[in-house]
Image 1 (cartoon, rainbow, N blue to C red):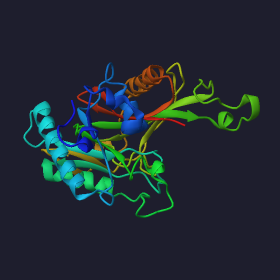
Image 2: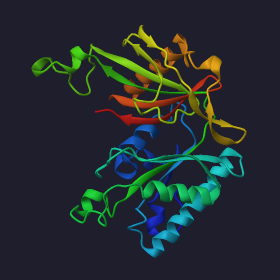
Image 3: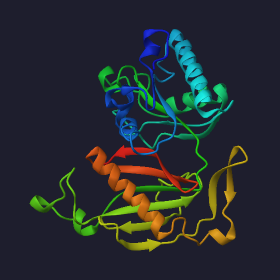
Image 4: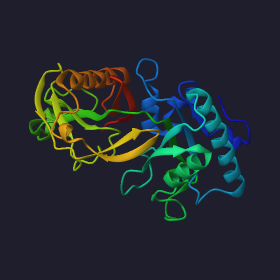
Length: 299
């Protein structure tokens, strides 16, 4: 389904899992195409993806088009979720052609059409080079006037969040020449690393944020588990996103038991086999079910 309107709008919104365009990296970027490639057999949140220009580059007519596009997409999310004001997560794809100084922001609780528009504006104006800020960049390096992919997902009330990907051992990363790891091929010395925290997992991508860690072999044998002290968490409770203290009884308790952490690792292996390349994933546990909320090609 495409939003009716100008040619700009018709090329600027795709829905999961209905549109084939959601799986085209040239349209939505490698990260979001990777995630949408999982919808046939892996749970993912209800979502839509907007490909839009930085507000610095938008023409007045295009600003109106973007508002109309978000209005139509928000109405669709209302119908799908059955909520008048669905809670939405808004984030911009990383790893594109633009120079980046840090990861793009993630807005965890955009509410209503105005909140959605503000969140999309914030992630589109996140510091990154455009022709305005760096005129040396040619248009083709910007995807056409700084076009970026913005993913809007339904917020899930996650009890635990985890990030999972390959953890290469010192012996693996230190090899060179013919013995060096080959991208895209299994590395017998690589382990599956899982980092987990309570709640929505805000800051989980930061290695400095306290999180439980697990290391599994490729045959899903647990070889290491470390429990971190987790004092703070971000949760979805009573219809709002809150920063809260972790209850004292949970601060030194593992977020995932061995069986649950193994399920996360098994899901990673399934996705890697499905997509035929290494990935980094973010997974949340909702009422005991695992849902993939992000999937990025590794390497």
